[in-house]
Image (cartoon, rainbow, N blue to C red; front, side, top):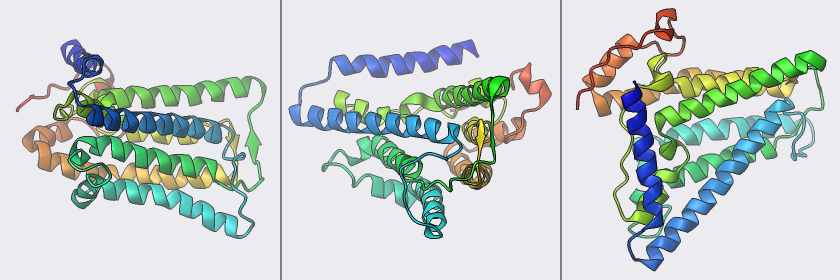
Length: 278
């Protein structure tokens, strides 16, 4: 396992180190840096908005749609993310992503473009939500400390899972860094290390955990948690179809050995022996 983790770190290090010595090309460099800046600013804003909004049970946001239309608007905000998220990962969606960049740079910037769109969707969801104003339960004292710690732990697990899957892809960095260095984007191999040794979908499980470990509960948070937990359970099925097509027997063998979302106890202490075929 350590060897694979080190290889993952070295790949990230090489990609980042290459940014300091890009080949000449002012226009290409300008496009790459612009996309990178936009991507990471929106990505950071979206993550911070998610953390803050859910920590307070979606009870504080900037949405001001009057009732009863507020819930119609909120449901629309919930639905827009999974619909676009899943579509853009489809074959047709990936083709469309290549059109959101200057001519010739679309395929290289596709992962960055995808991250920009997804981050914008999340930022819109968590900043434009219209709170109901109803608070069912709010942790206080030692309970607040415990629930805050659990919430922080869920986010740390999500960060770890994203790193194991390929931080450069998850953050959108792969596209703009590849363009800056004038190289073809090299995607991480099928993830089988780290949390992926225990379950096949740790990112979705970790995100679901962030939905249910909040210290404030409202009708708003419950609707969000139920909706997105259902998405986290169902959406990876589409992802696994793509992985089956991309990796064939390697993925089906991994699929047979590693559970979908609930780890087996023996997986917590033993690494699955997966054949790494090319």
